[in-house]
Image (cartoon, rainbow, N blue to C red; front, top):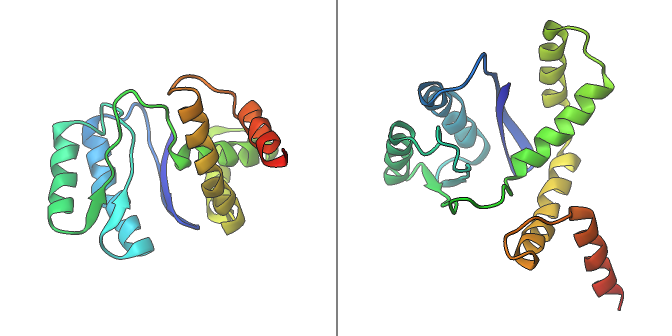
Length: 164
């Protein structure tokens, strides 16, 4: 498993997680990777987005992020409980997975090497396309009253509405 982040058209750190990540390891990732990546990408007062995974909502991690928000380093985006996962990073992981699969890793070592290679070679065009998809995905969730939706059908419906 890997943890990674991106902001705008640039990727931040990529970190290999060994085993099951617990709140303490996630806290370490926040301190060593997430906040430093955000500072490199945006400076100060950037918006930090994460979902409601129990590690993310632990007191340990929330207290740390609250401290960073109070000091003006970040603005923490509120994420509604039990909301559909609309985080753009999930779309980026899908792209990374597609590119990794094309390279056919043959061992754990080659998989790790290839993931790092793909991460480092992600183009700004890929991230721009992912970010442009977000309004369509959000609208599809709204249209589905927060329930399941088929993104392809939602996109077709949107095209039909535009064409008429």
